[in-house]
Image (cartoon, rainbow, N blue to C red; front, side, top):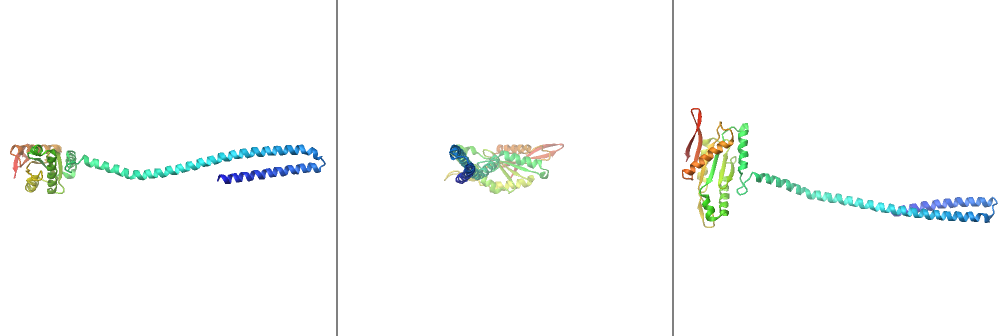
Length: 293
């Protein structure tokens, strides 16, 4: 591009000088033919040649500087265009790289939300998840059906930790959770309350049906569990069962009743399930506890 500009500029300059020279020649020829002596024309001719040479030199110098500046500007523009193109390309590359990263961040956020409601050891709900489940069951008008709650506590679990260590204890809890998940209904909810205590929520389940489900759990859950390669530990569990009542103000009341039943079962010797049900007497509710066989 710069070579074409130089050639075009030089051609224009040569043509202009040729026209000026031709015009001066015509003027001097006219003066000479009009009778002016030749010696009188030498001085003006020399002066015109000097002036024309000076003008040519200055013009060439100015044009050369202009062309250099124009060439420099053209190079700068080309570099800027190249940088812009490269920047655009890098931006596209970075954008392409950031797309999977953005998906990864979103996926990690979803995982954190799930982890916030999931017990990391047993892959069941945690206490927060349990509270959310029960709150929804109480707040939704279509779920006014009774909800039964079973609290489970592994018997003498501290002995496992003391004798075999906490790693073995964690394995026992994890394996118990697996066995529990395989034996509840698909719609039932399991949460780990902490330590060796679990909670099973039976949505839309009246107490007699819940009693039957707990009896089935009692019969199907393993009574021994392997803790080391050659050692099996007798695994008993104590339960407390209760059901929601129309007079309950919130979900915490049924949890409290199930917990009282659990404590009562522990006092009765463990490895059994006790029920805490409300039986209307006169104008008030009183607690009635009975053993679940």
